[in-house]
Image (cartoon, rainbow, N blue to C red; front, side):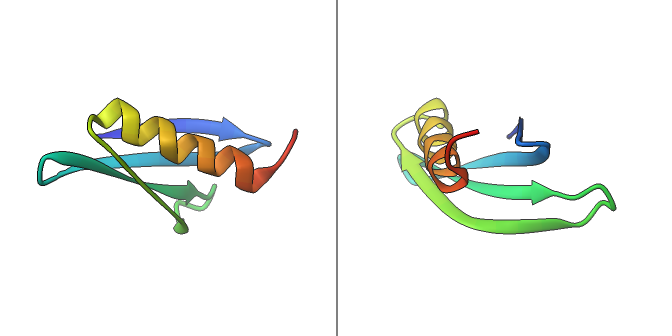
Length: 66
């Protein structure tokens, strides 16, 4: 399952997958030419929503204030 975010004119996807009894999320940056880069952000949580929210918080901290 993926969730799309646009921050600072850049497009990111948060990809979540079940892992055992929990969920793990990672962040990819999607480029205009169709390429994608892993940002190096991983987060986990008891639910998909929790994992996604943790990954988004880490991404926002990494990018800093708008």
